[in-house]
Image (cartoon, rainbow, N blue to C red; front, side, top):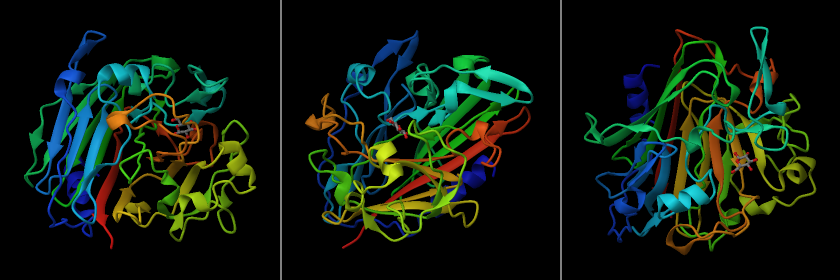
Length: 381
Ligand code: BGC
């Protein structure tokens, strides 16, 4: 799909997501001054997009990340449903994966090694002997070029962050040019439109690593969220969370989210994959129904907030925040408490470069990588 088509599809993707039409409560904005700094000689800043319903997203070009996302609940009260920090200094010392684009390769590559066109490549190993989320100098740690906030034809606001990743970065071949556009529409959808090209064959799998908590507070666990994942199967892993290469049915397992189920209901079941992940930390093989399919729907019954995720990607990594320790204070005094934020990462399968039976993650010169993922918000009674 070309970019224009991607934007059109993005805006149609969540037709069901309507306006709240109710009185709105105040939104507490992050302060631009707290993000105004220079890192690696590049200017870092905070950008704010708002739609006609008051839904607001704040983004920073440090890691092309979502810093705040305010959506209304069933009473019109707004909640900031992503975890993050109030200043760039806290981002630099806090959880590296709070809201950024991770890449070049989201999730793990076994032993930081793969072979492409007969040549083997050694990547940075930042998790034991494995490579995670693009390595210790992954895209989440880079200052991206930020475009101006743009007005699209729909009157919606968007912003594009772009990055040139040099040949050999973290061990990957090819100079890769990537850009991501965040487009906030008036139907309460936030579209993430990724495009990338390369000057030499490489592998690529960027994803957004927001931690969501639909309560808007990490004092309340995500265990109560009802989760539906449109996937009949998943990719089992070994104890280091590296895929074995198998594709296994979710039927009869705690990974069967084909009907909405509270996240906490089976999270501690005696099931090997849950032991390995210390909770949910698995790649689901999405049932695709077209260019853009529903990947997951998350609902918090207490306030009615519902998030619907559409994507054109083959996989969804569901990580239930099992590594969060409660250390470090995030925005609005929210600690990153154990299992208080869920990541739902639309992507190719982990370690696909080492599994010929997984969808290809190879990008070649002359091709354009395109990912469209849309987060839509509405409420249920
Ligand atoms: C991975 C987890 C990892 C986490 C870090 C997730 O995408 O699946 O294994 O611990 O990112 O935030």
